[in-house]
Length: 124
Image (cartoon, helix red, strand yellow):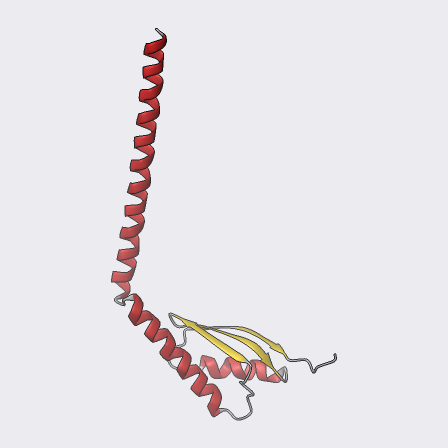
C-alpha cells in the first residue's frame, strides 16, 4: 500500500514537472513568434533600426547646431523609432522651449520628450 502511494506521488510529480516544462516552452515560443511578427511587420532588422536611430540623432544635433542662440553643449539626444528624448542643461529657461521646437521640426521626429533643466551657476 505504501509503495502504491509512493508511486502515485512520484508519477504526479513527474507529470507536473513535464507539464510545467512544456508550458514554459510553449510560452517562450509564443513570445518568440510575437517578436518575429513584430520585427517582420515593421520591415526593419535590429541593425537597420539602430542605424535609423543614429541617423535621426545626427539630424537633431545638426539642427541644434544651426541655431546659434542655443547652447547645445550640455544637451544629450536619444532617438528610438521617431521618439526623441532630449536631456541635459541649458543656461536659460527660454532655451528649453526653443530646443523642443527645433527638435520637433526635424524630419523623422514623431514625438519629443524634454528632460532639460536650467543650469545653475556654481556656488548657488
